[in-house]
Length: 342
Figure 1 (cartoon, rainbow, N blue to C red):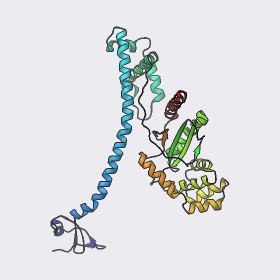
Figure 2: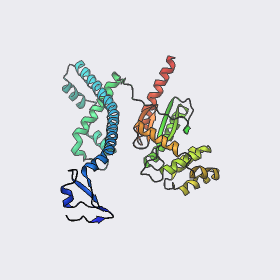
Figure 3: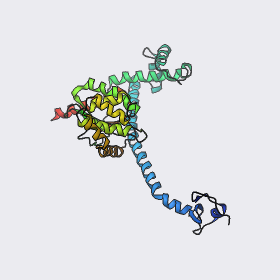
Figure 4: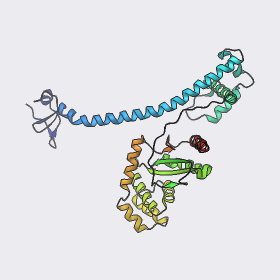
């Protein structure tokens, strides 16, 4: 038998070993004369593969659950729109096809010039030429305009209850009164560019709603951001001295200054007691608390930042202001209705 060539004690498999082993399983490695079989390898990997499968299944179930809620809303809206069109066609004694043709080509129909203007205002890099999508664009614009007219005549109300989760956020840094009508919990990462981008939107929300909303900060430092955990620990230490939000603003203002040295310098610039701050930071006083936030975020299905929960309703990513106001306005209306009922 040809001896395998050893590399630091662990050898690549020789043809002779690969052909057979004492257990009858293919040999995939050798240590000296000791074979390691594929059966042994599979047995060693089995728990890890099972855990991996369970995690992927959890993520798939979470994604399906979130997408199902959106699909239900979209499908309900589509069903309601179809009904509005059918009733309007029936009222005019026309088939749906003839009714749509009449509306699209009549006085309220979208012209090519209007479509061109819309195209010029919204085109982006990679958008097909206007001539290529003109017919489809005009049809879509006609449909949208028609539905707006019909919904004014017969308002559509989607009565589905939104999915909510319970977020344990007590004791975390917060802006806004404790009895605010709407609570927005944000899982964030100080090194995340999308979290920085969402800061302007968060500030616009406070300007728009004032004391009607309360923002609660929770940490979710992503593992691939080398300074995210240090920044989260530093912000907690700043919170200990009553300057969390000033410190948070400073971190997002310049995400290139998140090294331990920079974090301590920021504390000094903000007038914090540096001896207390440095001791808090160096000892990792709030490491366990941050890990607890991570664990809760994972349990809630958070897999990226920023992740918001508006009265328990999920909103993921650096969304535009309109995405927030749609949910906040809905929650304010519900809370007002519930208050008046009592």
